[in-house]
Length: 369
Image (cartoon, rainbow, N blue to C red; front, side):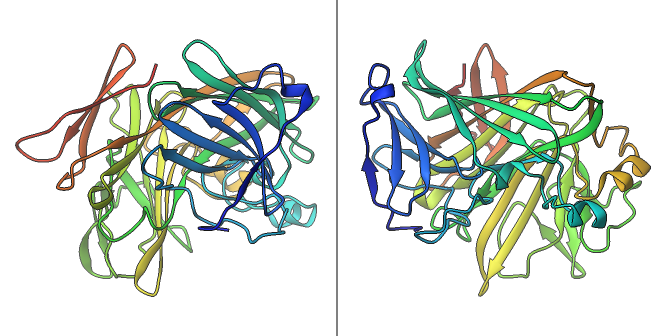
């Protein structure tokens, strides 16, 4: 399915009054249903089988970063694909929870999502709403996606509701995963995350930092984690952010393809960032650019026992029937073929100014609001 998706546009009479050439509901030949938003500059598709974003392209480029874990034609099972969300927890459940049917990374990637609002033009953007409910976790996630009509920018608003009769703890981690052909050995990962630790199997002691981004000791060598090599994948890198920062960001730059993928969010929503890499035959096959409410892919009992790390929380609590709203933005933008990666992203009145590494920075601006 990776490179031979055949898209068949279908007309639904209940949407005919609100759909336009810029916003369509589509089925693909594999049988998986997606909601697609199209603007004058970009297109994005959300797979309803798990809620993952499976396609994001600038018109004229054709390069989609979210090719990871696409399913074979005829496989209709909800699954973790492309940019998905870990909800209501990150990582593995407890053994007893697993026996009761709870999957790793929560139920959100493994249930079918529903359309609450079909794509429509709305104040300079193409907007849709989708939703999932977690039958075991008793949580609901309502997601509003808005694609700018003029830029390759998507704003996402998530409404998280505890539909249980009792309060409970939970976690939510946005899990963008990039793959080839966008991902190759030239890609550079940049973030304003700084102090962190590595997690693997078993989990190391994390009270003291073992990483100061972008360097870490791996296999007795000092490795630049922002770059890709033919070494085996290092452990997951978990990063916190400077206390004086209001926003977090992470980017993936491929100068050879002239394209940058970037994410921007409030640290009050998501105080943690996680970066992992996977190699096949010496080549990068996947890279996770995660950000969320926890760095710990563990059962809740262990997370609660750990409490905080670096003074930051590792889980959240919602009372019965309580709703919490979080948001983030992501974008694609062109970069020069000799671009050195992002050193900083400044936000001012809806505009991101992306500064380049090196003495002579070439600034790039992106309008996110």
